[in-house]
Image (cartoon, rainbow, N blue to C red; front, side, top):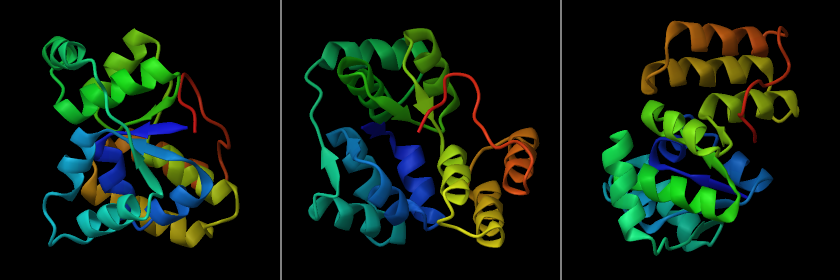
Length: 173
């Protein structure tokens, strides 16, 4: 199972990869992430996420350790959704899906495996679910919507064009 924070859930929805991802893996979010991602009901991504939650394709699981959430927010300067997702992933031994730089640092320090939207995109291509051309179009959308460095986008483009075909570090999916 993978616990998603808001950034990754929203980015996957924006690049139209959330439905494919939800068919491949079990997605869990905290109530904080549910609220953060569905509150702007007029947005396409909020509607999609809300529908997947209503259909129970995305599971919502409560985190009872409110004091731990507050400590993580302060210690790592992260929002409630990222903090609650990190605690749930650590507690359950799940992977954390995040694109938030501070949450990634916290995951590394706390020993929580993590993955990102770009990792999902590359793996979806590698599994043959997306053509290279479509994957590259989605990567271009990530360049616009996400907060990625040029190096990260170039590395992903190289992986999609047939270069590196494997992950590194503590990232998983």
